[in-house]
Image (cartoon, rainbow over all chains, first blue to last red; front, side, top):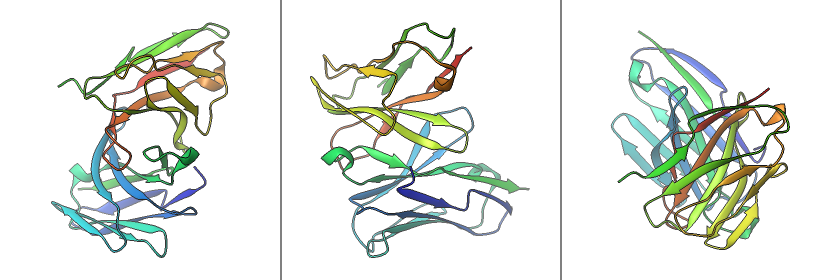
Length: 114
Length: 112
């Protein structure tokens, strides 16, 4: 969706390096969701952020929500080959007036070189 | 729990044929939705449902129909398949609006 911009579109990092993926909405955010997808597979839920300033971490992945900027960032510390995949941000922007329908960005393809 | 189950996993159709993509969830979720994923386009919302008997259009609804007669099932119908509908289709469900959406494994559809 053009309402949700993800950057960068692709990223190649050396194993052990840190990286950040950004997701910016042109609409009011009522919730921001991060998913990971391996090629040809379904989406794996990573984290959900709902409140401005909220920050969540799972293992080496941290996500933050900046409500004022309508933006979220996903940060991976000390990347590993297992982190490779496509990262998708999904936003609840009350599409159609209903909550719960997520609009997605185009995704960020992450490759981690051993 | 099975979660969200999509069938079939793969399908090849000829232009003009019709078919139904099945989606079933066993989590008693009210919200269900269909997305298509194309290279470089991310996921785009096709149709969604906020409960049995209630459906609405998403971002790219043309060429697709849905119905929601039960809480568990949310089939997606292609009325007359076109090559532009070649894509990977994902079904998702969630309990309520601000909870995690669970996705099926996808249906890879090719229209020739």
